[in-house]
Length: 392
Image (cartoon, rainbow, N blue to C red; front, side, top):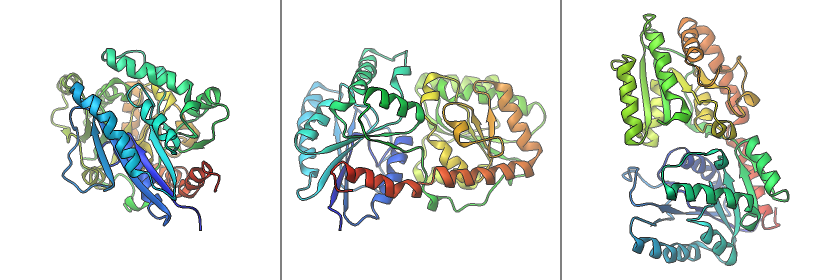
């Protein structure tokens, strides 16, 4: 029998959140099947919670620590977090800190402390912050700049690195040539997608968008494309989930008005995981991932794509980053990023030829199962964790 493994996920919440939380839940779902693995989570949060805590926790061994908004909270959270690192550490087990996203000025100390008291550390890098050139505030800039510095010196912190894209893999190899690397793209859990395939609503199909409301995901181009489709006489509804800043939401609603889409738009806000899955699998017919051609988009990978493809429904996706490594025009509707006309043409092709749209959707589902089904990565990932303790 293998030695016990104790994994503490830090500092992102695995109970409440969006794409990052879903990535971690996919991993944990399979880890729970291993009898010799225990799991807990320390989440560092700012001054307010953005997500509803009414539902049951995905992980009950959960500590939530606030580092703001007061100086008192910031000081005390240091001691509280250190306390939880000690409490969740298990004697007789290999203790692993799974660090999601970037180490930065706010949290690097805790990673060093964890290593000092006997944790091995694996860092999951899902974006390239070197591509970020504009900042919301001085503290936001400090956070991003420090995270780039720590990435270049990741060997101080990490025993192993998990990467989501080839761009990030190449960057880690450059900065930390000796670091063990595990390639983990976006994944999904197959048990969640026992659905029928294709565009079924002949009268008024539903176009679905989920994500941020900022520039990187190309929502303004999608809205303009939908306006072009509407003037041809096609009927559709446009369901959106997610959230944006007040300024982003104001721009969104002004764009809805500008493009005369008020009757088509159905904005659902932030959805619980259960509600999101219901909309995705039962209500939606056409799924959109319309990222723009930015350095940020080309460096990472859209979290939602694996699940979108897994529905077996037609997916419109921008040709950015690793997309064409996995998909061709036989499996999805590949569009030029940031081009309204390309999106509009894809939408019209789906609406005018449902049989072809359904065929591509089914082919896309096969790609999702082969490349993004988490079953394919679960056992190798556990082996990667165990290698950090030399008992693979």
